[in-house]
Amino acid sequence: MSALAHYQQQFLATANAHGLRLATHGGSDGAPSADLYRAAGYAPIRAASQRLHRYRTAAANGQMVAGQRVDSARGNIAADANLAAHVAEWAQYFHEGDRRHGGHGNQRADSGATLEALAADIASGRMDGLSPMGNEGLTSILPDVYQYAHDDLPAWDGKLLPIDSSSVDPAAEWFTWYEVDNVGVAKAGSTYAMKDVPMVAGPAAQTNLVMPIMPFLVGMETNFMEARREALGVRNGKPNFDIDMRKREMCDRAIAEAVNNLWLYGDPLAGIEGLWNSSSVSTLSITGVWAGKTSAAIAADLLSMFSIFDTTTGDLVDRKKVRLILPIAQYDLAANQPMTAAGSESVLSYFLKVNDLKATQVTKVRDLAASNSSMWNGGPNGLTSDRALVMYVKGDRWDPKFMLPQKIEMPAPPRQNGMGETTFFHARAGGMMVADARRIRYVVGM
Image 1 (cartoon, rainbow, N blue to C red):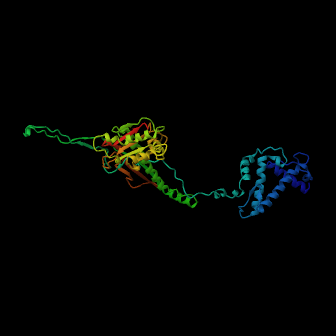
Image 2 (cartoon, rainbow, N blue to C red):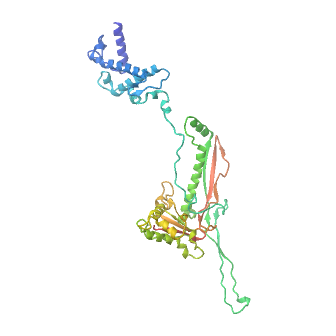
Image 3 (cartoon, rainbow, N blue to C red):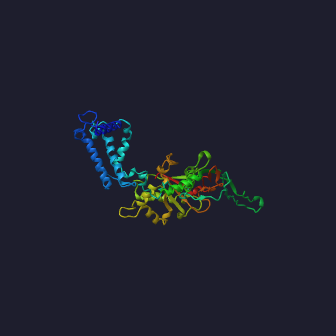
């Protein structure tokens, strides 16, 4: 056997062992004849060799290889060019089967099939991604972290009622207040005899609603590895997530949400009354929703809200001390609907000007709309219909208010817990205190 024939046999055996079908002279799978190079069946093999040569030349010259560039140059551009050429050719073989090399188009069914998807990805991806971790190195990470926005907490933020954090002792479990009335009856007498003069009995005093104080607690854990990992992430180009600070913010937010919910809706099982379930507050009903109402009718409704305290006993007569909080939709309607067809002044602006009121006396809060009153994320709505709130604000300690005997605190130092620390946070809250029920009204029907 000649050296050429021996080489051809060895080549054929190696190809067959690796699953590569080679067309031979005469169409059989025997040893290729000496004129294999000139046989028609050898044309695909010769074409593949020529493609490899062109791929290597193109890659070495910085040109495109199978539609891609090879520009990472891992120290030896010739080796990169050779690798790129073979990857492109074998990827096509995996994808098309042996038709590309003169067979019948059967895709590989041996262990090479598991590499088919990978090879196809390589063939259609960036060739410089073949370098270890190359893909990660091509990702640009922005330095800032987007912070999710949460709903406002109107009660906790003081947008509805004042917050009293000094009247009740932080250690108290309950709170109440006394009410007193100075009354007496005089008598028209015909004599100055002492026995005929009526005496007053003294102040008539009684305690009002006794309401419990509710504690709220939450905690956080930290360990020494968090700071190290955070620093490593920053060195690797990741943003600084400020883990400790954000955990503290989570604790504050958790307590704030719980207290905000208590103040709005109370806790009937615990005997705590909130803003919307107080037994002391009366309701003003408006006839007809504002959507579709005339401007004059909306202005008349506003007047009825501001004048509701005129009919009460006592000294609630100064309309400059009245505050009205509307749901957003009703506020926007009053603030944008023209008072007259011929003018541009809104109903709200006209009403405030005519009654010599300030713009700050009418505000809006989104949580007063029933659709925005979910008691927790994904929970039921706390309101069944939109409500407004009208109050007479004297500015003394007997205005309706929310009770917060203990603001958010860290009641004890961080506790060592193995290789980390545990920190607890605590607050104590009551419900809504309404000493003078004349000063607040619900408004419904808008």
